[in-house]
Length: 63
Image (cartoon, rainbow, N blue to C red; front, side, top):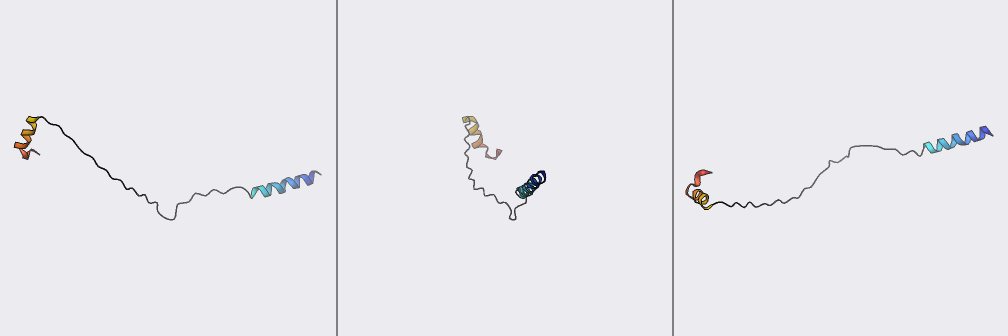
């Protein structure tokens, strides 16, 4: 009886050993591409004093 139950246990272990999932990590065959369609718009508002504005108009070669 002991031999028969141990035979059943051994057989069950062999059958369950075939059910172990296989995990594999591999690099993709094609390169990874990232599409980035981004539109960036910005506005800069500068407030200056009238004296500075007149100076910039008179001496345009400062910058």
